[in-house]
Length: 124
Length: 208
Image 1 (cartoon, rainbow over the protein chains, first blue to last red):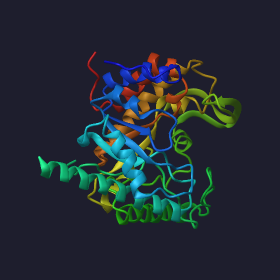
Image 2 (image 1 turned 60 degrees about the vertical axis):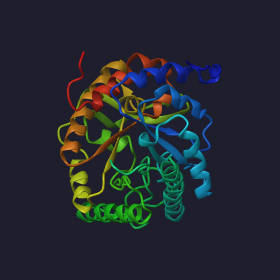
Image 3 (image 1 turned 90 degrees about the vertical axis):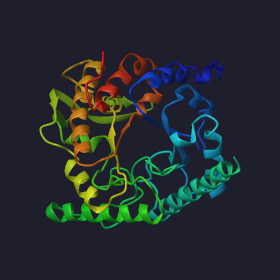
């Protein structure tokens, strides 16, 4: 089953299936504050995905909950053992203190989801 | 990797102000010669410590030894003249004065392998190393030699593959190819972008 996401994203709908069939095993995507719908990740199901949960184009440091929200949404399309929480892009243009803050919050957000997953496993 | 949800960064980290002016792309080095080499290694140590202090699971060099993620790699290759500049449109978005491909491109010696060995010595954590992808490389050059984006992309894919294999041998766990141009030239991605990237990544020959 393949949903159509509208003409705006049709180009991704043409390239992602080819990426899905390639020998590339890990794909990195901007997700937080991205204009591209996360549903597209469904088209590369089976690949490991580096999910960008940190916007590098703003000095505002995300909250751990915001990072967790992005990762939780990505988990609809990526299996937990294939999800790699990540930044959207490089942080060289940011100040060191902002970059440090964003690194910390990436870990804190991932930790929230790890806790939720371990509760799920414990409940089973 | 045994840990679920291992965290990492997608690329660079800011450089210390004593190495290069921060918050700036293309920032010039503030040190010279041997002192610069030492400074880069110190910056790499700091970048590693910052990542570990933040609980980042898959660490990188934070690109502390590079001025730019594409250009620094190309500077180490033969066949590209950095004095001969032409203005081209990059990623279909902005015009820039870029170096010219004047002859056959080749990698005469490893580019980042010594840096990777240095990082490997500092930590037992998994290491990720970023390289530019073939399509993103050709998009920052004027090609006066091959006169074919696809031909040049295949050449770069071969060169990247040599570098990637040596990085793996130096103990790098994940090699990341940055393909910013994949969001722009969708037709070419399907025609040869993904195939050239596969060639760059392949640890062993791709079955045909």
